[in-house]
Image (tube, rainbow, N blue to C red; front, side, top):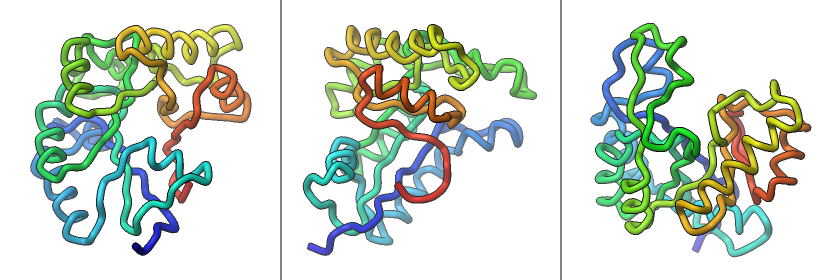
Length: 209
């Protein structure tokens, strides 16, 4: 087996037809998502579990050349409806980072940003449990999707530790991984994530892990 030297992590959000250019930054049409996945498969890429990536980064078992990790921020219902069937066809695992305080709600943090003035549904607890039983991995996108570097220490702790606890009650295990909301992170936030017990965290910075 030729071993991986670098493992790309792909980040998606909503999988639905965007209404405007702002939504197109954070969403992909279902047909476009299918084309992405099929093109990756034809090029020899294969999805691997997020645990396998972190094990590898920590010096564990090698990953095959062409390994990729597929993630979705926020926990939109459209991922279940549009992306999961495509990934199931390919047999590829994927991870969803959940905003634990908004499960079953909508992406309220975008209400003032989206020119369309709309929000979209997030997965509810039953949907999450069903997807977990089907092999989908769920981890933390904090409690309320706030910009973490702007918070004081107490609020930062609440967003990080509170999310782990809430997800632990839902999933049966505390979240091991974190995706920073908006990709916003600084050394203080990194230290707080470690102190909260996260094993690894993901940003939006381009480049290789």
